[in-house]
Amino acid sequence: MTFVNEKISVDDFAKYGLAEVNKDFLFGPDAVRYWTIDRGKNVYFRWMKGNWQEPMEQQVSFFWKGALFHIDFKVAGGGEKTADGWKGWTHWSWKGVRRFKNPNDQMILEAHREEIIADLKDALTAYKDAGILSRRTESIATFDF
Image (cartoon, rainbow, N blue to C red):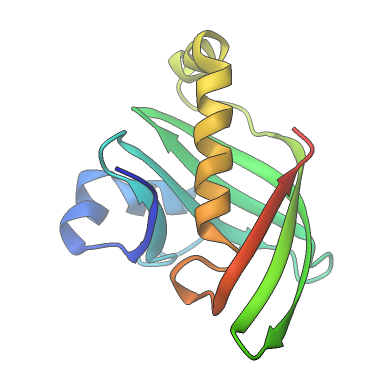
């Protein structure tokens, strides 16, 4: 399978314990109802929070085969409307990973770092600039990690 952008079903919201994950970002239990998911790999990406004072600072949640990572990024991008639709680019700059709630997640990251980073880049590429809400018909993602 590949990553797809979609609204999170009620069943998936419960299955992945997303109400609890939302608490890590000071949201109510129903916040952030969209994701970018590869069901075959059991991997998902969720944009969680931006900083209105620093709009390029973004917080995301990345679930990888049982391990949960909360990652901070600095994001830049741009685009334009063309005759063929919206085209744009997004550059993701790594700012860091928050402290792990589950110590096993650190070990999983150390053991599978390259595969996790590759899947994260694939998810961010599929996410474009706004996941299911994106209007882009063409999107380029670049990374500094």
